[in-house]
Length: 355
Image (cartoon, rainbow, N blue to C red):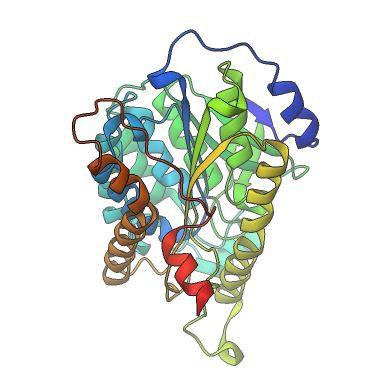
């Protein structure tokens, strides 16, 4: 499984990628990229956003050549490995079905001999996350690996903290391991072995891999001006409040709340660095929750996750309203080009900032 290192000099790399040759063919000559952030059970929100986008926009506008995912985002990203470009609706529905299967018992269990104490003293994680591997193997391994789309999962090397992207999968087994590595919350879930190294949650270094999405489009030969990026984030402006009394929180909930805070702080730098390094890219939609999401990131409460998915669909609809108006004004056009929202954030966020 080949990995790609995080660029340490994004401005320099952005300049170099401007010089890449043009691709010979593409839908309307554009490379469409999707970046999904980390966020635990907030992956349900991301699925909702994607359901909204693929159901409301013309197929060509969500025909993503590149999809990147971090942590929870990688859990959705993995589904795109099973569907060719143009069949995004199928990938999103598979992602929906996967997320619907996620609950605490389907993701992790206590270690058989000694439980959490065994995990703390003798294992590499507090919990045994083998159930999550079994779930993904059952869903993905029977499906053929599709090679026409670049699908990347980001993870951090435990040895030295290096961020790597895993994009060139040789099998569905590679995809499963990359998903689990990207989502391996340090100290909570089992680190994953890839090419002789151990990897943990990519969100430690990057929360939404927009730069990686752009770099992959550039590697296909696209100029910045021909790259369109959609980003879905689980945090954004609304830092999730813990539902527990902070004075009574135990170790694991404190770790998880710290991860939520870290993701919240990391979102904006990830986005800002991408815009600085690649100023000519079309940052079309940047969508995040218009309302705070309750609970910790590993509650996996079915009722709340259903609400998150509905919120995602609603936020997607609000984000693309200008594009939909343009499409409705051109009912006979077969080459619809939704115009990007003038503000880098979506419509619902603008309303919040006005309050």
